Length: 101
Image (cartoon, rainbow, N blue to C red; front, side, top):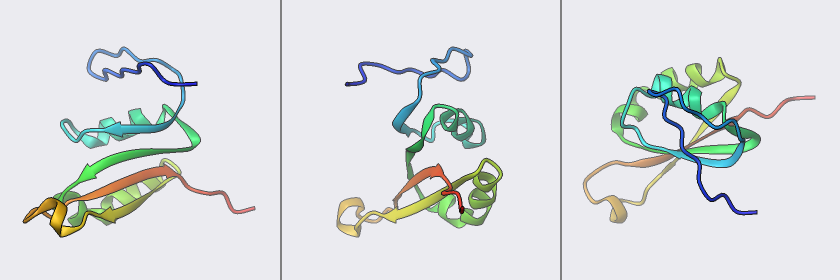
């Protein structure tokens, strides 16, 4: 089954309640609103992918705490320097924390 379309407009309060395996988000607005909205739409095993820069990385402990309150974790994968030239960029993958049983 392929996803044909999914649009979430947080400013317009128009959302589709379907759950997804993978959501990509852009850091064009306040992430403190965008990330929780995306969390609502991922499956328990799903991930949110976000391309991040130095500012996000400098505040990584803030984001880890922010996500922990939502039962989520963040994994950071740096991009190779040859792909991003002088810019220090990385990918952040956000998902639900695994439960310990």
